[in-house]
Image (cartoon, rainbow, N blue to C red; front, side, top):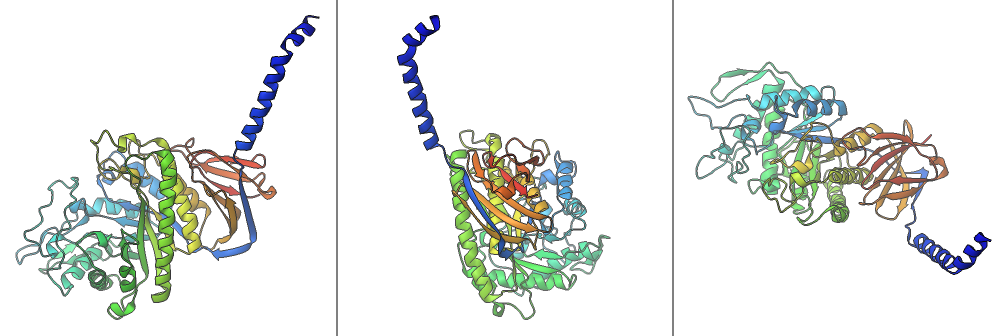
Length: 509
C-alpha cells in the first residue's frame, strides 16, 4: 500500500522525467559523432614505398660534452638506429660550424677543430653502421666581400645570428670555396690535410662520408640566387670529390620551399652545371607556423592545413624533378613546427618555451606522422623530422628531446614507432577513411599487414574497425605515454578510440 501510494503520487513527475531522459538520450545519440570509417583494399597496391623516416641533428651547446642532456641525446640517437641521419653544424655558433674563422695570410692560418670535433665524433659514434648526411653548412664569412670583417663572439656557445654577411664571393673562381670544404672533409676522412701555406694538419680520423649536403637554406642566406647557388654547389662538389670520390651529394635544402620555383628549374637542369657534376639528391623543408594567439584547438587546423599546402607544393617540385632530372632523389629533411616567439625567453605575455603545453609534443608528433604517410605516397625517398635537440634560445619547439630531463619526448617516439614498422619496399595499399580529421594508411610489410593511424584533432576520435583488425596488436604514442616508449596493447572490440593527437600502429594477426 505504501508503495502503491508513492507510485500514484509520483506517477506524473516520473513519467515526465522518463520522457525527458529518453529525449535527451535520443538527442545525444543523434549528435554523437559517428566513428571514423576505414576501408583498406589489401590487394590494391598504389605504390611500393621508397621512403625512409629519419631526423636531423643540429649542433648547439646542449650537445656539447658535459652539457646536461648530452648523454641522453646521443643514447637516444643510437637507440633509434636511423639511416640518412642529417648532421648540421650551423651558423648561430660560428666556432662550432666554421673551422677556419679568419682569412689565411702568408704567415698563418686559423684552422681550428677544437669546437667542431667533439660533437662530430659523438654524432659519428652514435650513428656508426648507418648512413649519414654531413652538412657543415656555413661558408666562412671572410670568403665574402664585406665592408669590414665580421666580428664573431669569442664564446663558442653564444648565439650569433648575423654571421652570414655579404653576397658576393671574393674569389669568383670558386677555388677558395672548394678548397675549404675539401680540406674540411679531408680532416675527417683522410687523417688530415695540407693548408694554404703548405703546412700539414694531422687528425688521425678516417671516417667515411656517404652523403654530403651542400649548404643549408641558401634562399635565406647571402641573398643567394639560383644561379649563385648552382655555381657554389659545383665548386664545393669538386673540392670534396678530390678527397672523397665515393661521396654522393645533396643540393639546395631550401627554407621557403615554394617561394621561388626557379631554384628547382635552374638547379635540376644539368645544362647549368659543369660536366660530370652529380645531382644525387635535392632537399627542402617545412615548418608549420601558427599565429601567436593560437592554442591547441587552433593548432589542429593550422598545423595540418599548412601541411596540406606543403604537400601540394611538394607535388609540383616532384613534377619538375621528373621532367629535368628523374634520377635525382628527394629528401624532405626538416619537418616540424616552429612556435611563435620560440627563441624569446622574456615575452611572458606570449607563447614561449616555458608555456608549451605537454599535448603540443603530441600535436607536433601527429603532424610528422601525417607528413610521413602522405610524402610516402608521393614517392619521397627520405622523410626527416627536425630535430634531435632544441632548447630555450635555440628553437625549443622543434626538439625531440625533453630539454629539462634529457629524455626523448613524444616527437621522438612517433619517429621511432614509424621507423621500426615501415620501410622501403613496403606496399602502400589503397586506403580510405572519413572524416578528414583522422588519417589512416595500410601497408603490407614483410612482417605482415600494418595500419598507421593519426588523430589530427584535439579531441578523442573513434575508428570503426574491420573484422580482420580484431585482436590486432597496437602501439600508441599519446599524452598518456608522455616521454615513454609507445604503449603496447591489443585491440578489443570493433571500435578503437584514439586520444587527441595520438599516433598508433596496428599489426594485424
